[in-house]
Image (cartoon, rainbow, N blue to C red):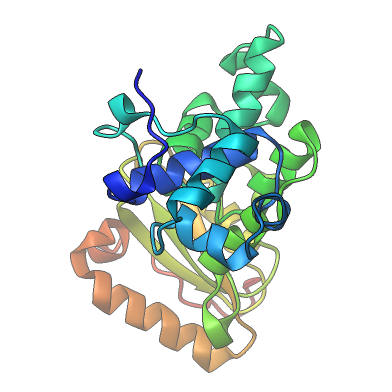
Length: 265
């Protein structure tokens, strides 16, 4: 492993920003706390971690004094882009492993699957499902503010509210209110688009009795709450038209969520 602390002889890019972020989280420091130690602004730490700014040689030396040598030149080629959540979670899991636990026991204790933990650590998955963050916090402790803000921003849909993921095979996660939802297969391709004017969970209960409502055709779900009946219908129609034949169940006419008189919608 080779390390460098000379900002003038390197290109400050995304992998280096990610390494700075990972080193900060490993020290359990917020951006603001690190900024105070280095004698700069929190805004600058954010810029450096996102590769939108470059620390001076003196600032890089001060960062190294606080965090230790954190730039691994040998690891730059394959360094993945990680989210705030991914970097924080990776550190938390490594700490648990050092204490003798393994990924299987950690996943079980969190109430999440091993593939889900891998995805959250190593991809741009920012946990759009609020319940996922709740599970992680119950097990690992308080989640840093920047991680929570990142997830909130990822779920935001402006005036429509929030877009959230859920597990369609876990009744406890079924959305209880009215709105529009999409079901995805194991490759995260949309397979069904539906709506409910009263309760999405009611529609999912009906779906769960159907032959197609099983893995791998139905693996994940997403929803957005809405109270306006016309808006709900417009969103559903738009999604079906935009996704076209990708929503294979809608396209084949296996089941379409039209309101039946007297049926709980």
